[in-house]
Image (tube, rainbow, N blue to C red; front, side, top):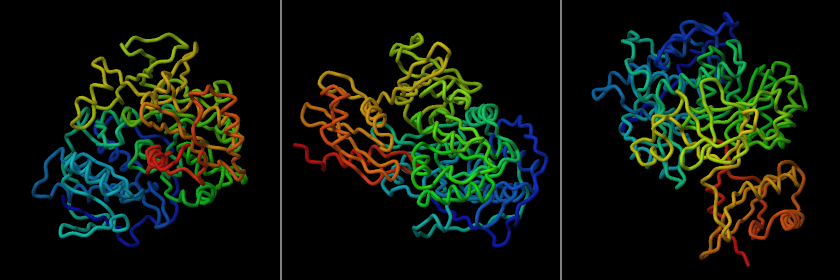
Length: 520
């Protein structure tokens, strides 16, 4: 596998902020995501596509940079359509150039986290056998004889012939952790990604003059969704702020006149605890969104109040659905406590039993989804594909849920997290919700511990704000509110929870701490 390092030509950014072009979303009939991007880029021209500390980069610049990557890939002696190209870059103009350049070259993008551990990266490379790895000098810390450097944009040569891969042809291979912790490659087609982007653009108030602060990694499903929807709307991505300094995110929202922001629940917890969200006005902000996990209703309501008159949208999805499936409108937030909302346009949702029969309102079962955004399957894993994708197009999401009489859906946790304790089926969320309801300033994660034939829970706690957590009070609440078989054997307080590269609580990392805990 050869490695290509991308490097920006010094002084080649647009410079300062560019006045907005026509604020009308361009029409997009293309069936190839790369072509759709190119059509938008030609329409938007000098409108800023990406703004960073290094400068502002227009859609025209981005298109030229993407074609530079395309020309490099197509000129390789072993080039072939459908080749897989690994992208290991942080959020940057280079990432966008590499992603769309790969699609314009009729290749398949394989996004990887920059911080990917060596063993996991080796396993992914072994599974998908990419021909090229594209990175930046800032993100790449290895050496080898096969390194090449491409300065962006590369203006030499013509744009070349249009890519032929489209529709149900594979566009992106997105690796996620399976139930065993081993990587699983989610195969997403051009049609999957375009269909879901269209659905979101109809559901969210995204406009061509928007400026969204994009901190979610583009290599993950949610971050990729933010990327695609805003680029395909002709909007601007603001790449500022850092989770290591949550206050910098709120500062960037204010100083850069950001109109929108999207994050997972763990990020919002940081913004409330360390970022002082809501203490100063954000006059340009129009809306925020959350997805990637369950956000407590009281926290969602708190955020909605802090950012008003901007609106707060609760969403739900997963990588296998490209990724968005449902959305709760801001007007329903206070009336539908804990709901993920209704299906977004183009998506069907249903609650089904193990036999695939639809269950009535109020019954808890498997949340299933159908639409053009459902994945093609798991990379070279037909058995895992058959477990979640049915022949009639329904995707078994792995989430337990119910719907109410008005068609709103409510989650009950991941089915894979269910464990049997003393003959009872118990979900960690049953313990976590009791604790967090009584102690709003605490975050709780219950991890099962099995010794011999006995399975019980270890409860990890982390502060949501500056207030201390009294373990004795938490234990007393659990003893009062929970039956004995759900009562955690041990309570462990951490300064903060470990997070995955997608900024979600890393349950696997917490699970590694369990064997080290001595329980009497």
